[in-house]
Image 1 (cartoon, rainbow, N blue to C red):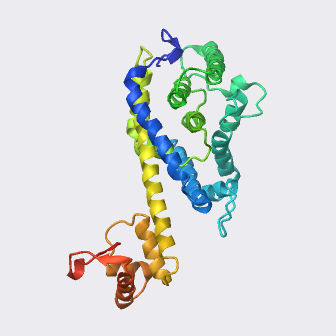
Image 2 (cartoon, helix red, strand yellow):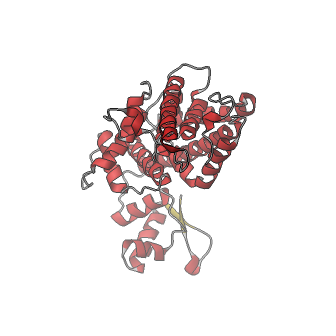
Image 3 (cartoon, helix red, strand yellow):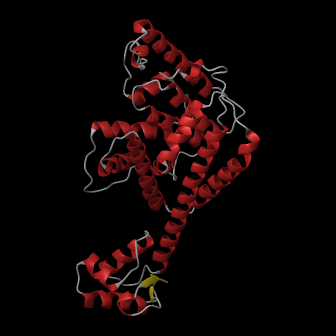
Length: 350
């Protein structure tokens, strides 16, 4: 069995090369500022909808990283309740999903609160156990008996206490880097039999939100980690196997992943703002439901080219009706016909 990482010489003093990380950290900080600036241009309703999608997607993908599939509608319904968004027809949530959403909202909204053992146990849904130590995992061994079980359980509890003290101590370290360190350190300790990854990402959320000092999270870090799941697992494994306790490589990977999340969020906000301006420009234009539906699909990144046959299939209408709808939008300068003709004729937004 692999020795716990706290048996390594120098633990728990993880190290990294600030000079090597400084350029990427600077890029991340710059993109955070740009994203905050663009988010300030959103109207209240659009911002709430964007937050709803962002937080819901992050919760869903974080759970999928643990192999747990959540009902998307139930997650959205619960998040909508926290954001005071009325969504007629959405299903009532269930207690398990409500707890998962509450944990995420706690990390984002109460990011200035200290991280305590009580708070972590609440996230784990173990809060209320009389002896907290017995809720930590016990090392799995077939040969060394109950004494090792007990000693490892106590050791984990002690490591958690030391970890919590570190998280609540002011350090001359950028909170973005502290997010990466806290995330990894919880996974090094692995205090629970399951959900260590989800809890590590909640700790990450706290410090990333402290870095922004803004609880309205418009980027999806867990979505990026899910997209790069194999690389994510490899980066954690390599960090765990590094006996020098130098985690520069992990932090570099973490920063690049965060940068990708910020780039995606900024691109999404650019599209949202452009879409908002588009509808402001054409707000007095008379359009039918089919036309509004297809224009919104194009703004939202519809796969493939818009053709009259696609229009007819999506709207369950005749080819002639599709062509009339499209020609009307061309006449109104909303669409234009691309160069190719015949069956390959397609259309784009002006």
